[in-house]
Image (cartoon, rainbow, N blue to C red):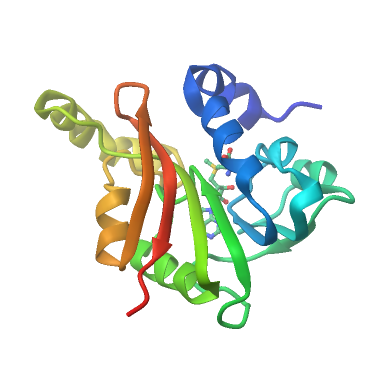
Length: 191
Ligand SMILES: C[S@@+](CC[C@H](N)C(=O)[O-])C[C@H]1O[C@@H](n2cnc3c(N)ncnc32)[C@H](O)[C@@H]1O
């Protein structure tokens, strides 16, 4: 049965999210960690021929993710702010539509840095503060109410600023739906 989340997301998927998933996910290979997998919307796009190990995860894993992952992936409950893996464990980390609701963004990005192998790549789709003075005003106005009714989702974060602040080099980025959404890749700078 289709989840309420997937039903809610259906129109947004067709306005660009699905296209972004199709561009990013098939490039992933090796040992892979996906964070905040939700109902498992990215699972159909992995090229399993190129993957050695796939871990999909969420704060709380629901039945849709377990069902979709089945034999394809290992399913774990975890918090991106405190990842239970040794340093340099993964070739790729993926998160889509997750960092809008992570309590401590910098902590999460530092944990991803830590678990990525040297040269490893972070792939992301996120919704962010849109460009334009008027849009920013509107979004800042509705954000306090939205955060309350949406389990902590924020509409006005800048994910690219967070990447830069946490020493990632953004290697590719694209925007869609009037700059509300971004997707791309970033690599930890070795310091
Ligand atoms: C909007 S859903 C996105 C689901 C899926 N990734 C997608 O693209 O449709 C956000 C997910 O992030 C998860 N999440 C939020 N904060 C998290 C955290 N600190 N650590 C791990 N997962 C988190 C939530 O539990 C939720 O399943």
